Image (tube, rainbow, N blue to C red; front, side, top):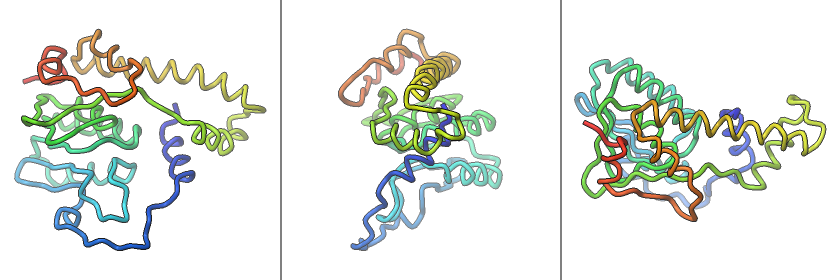
Length: 217
C-alpha cells in the first residue's frame, strides 16, 4: 500500500483540530514528543499542545533520526503511544533497528507503535502497561477520498479498477506485516492472531506477550 499517500489523504480529508479554546500547555507538552534522558530516548505522543494530534505522524520520522544522530550513545527507546501513521511507524522502526536500540513500553503502545516497539533488540514493558493490536481499517470516507485523489495518476477509470488494485494491495500489505512480526521473533501463530477481526483493541496478557516473543530479554 502506498502508505505515505494514505497518510496524506487522511490528513486532507480530516477536519482540523479545534482551535477556538486554547487550553494551558502542560510542562510535558512543552518538552514535546521526544525527550533525551541520558542513554534513554523517550517518545511519548501524548506530550503535545492541545491544538495538535496526539499520535505518530510523518514529521516524527526526521525528528527521530536527527535526535539519534545527535545522541549516538542512546541505548533505550521508551515508548508511550496509541499509534498513528503506519508509514511513520515503519520508518521509525527501520531507524531503531539500524541503531540496535532496546525498546520499553511505559503506559500503552498500540497500533503503529507496536511496529516501532518490535524493532527493539531487547523488548520490555513496565508493570501495569499494555500493548495493543488490531486489524488495519479503512473507512468508506477514506476510500472515497483516496480514489478521488489518486485515480488519474493510477489510471483507475472507475471504482472497480480501484477495487482490483485494493484487493491485491491488501494481500501484499498483510504478507509484509506478518513477515515483519515473524522476522522480529514473534511466534507465527500469535502473529496470525493479531489479524483476527475484533470489535476492540486486543491487549494480550504479559504471559502471552512473553511466550509469543513480543517481549524478550
